[in-house]
Length: 215
Image 1 (cartoon, rainbow, N blue to C red):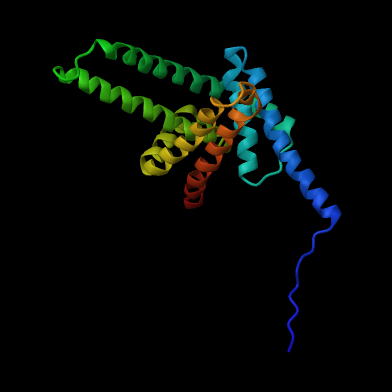
Image 2 (cartoon, helix red, strand yellow; image 1 turned 45 degrees about the vertical axis):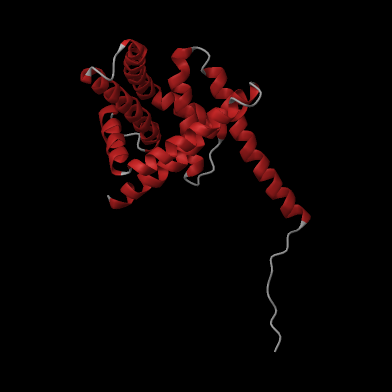
């Protein structure tokens, strides 16, 4: 008794359609990075541009088929206030961390326990700031009804309930930046920021989705 296995054969038209779809996805990723880089040149607009980038990448990660320009600029328009506040908080806390780090060379960590404690607190604050940012930007575009306080509280909760996964996502998100250091400078303008945000959205959506399901 013979068995006939049904196989899905690809046709030239289907291959062209798939190729066009992949080209469109990668083209949008590159376009998003270039647009973000241009709009971030005035530093004051960087938070809004980042919100637009997150709005588009998050929609892609969640399986939507977003219209690039509409979703990108809609994210800038809707979330620029929250993004600016988050950016100011990052600048303030980050500035304090940098200030403390600049003082480290003048401290005696072996003889002074306060100096050792200060270094430990600084390292913890820097790591916590980076990890909380992973979720804060994603939460801002996924749950627009949340206030800044609710965004930061929920982001901190996700970090402390999923610490190992959050660190893995942070390391993965930093990799494109590290790799771009060994590539031509133009690579940062072409793909680095989009790759970082895409990784962050993929990693954080896995956690956020679990908590949305529990509600």
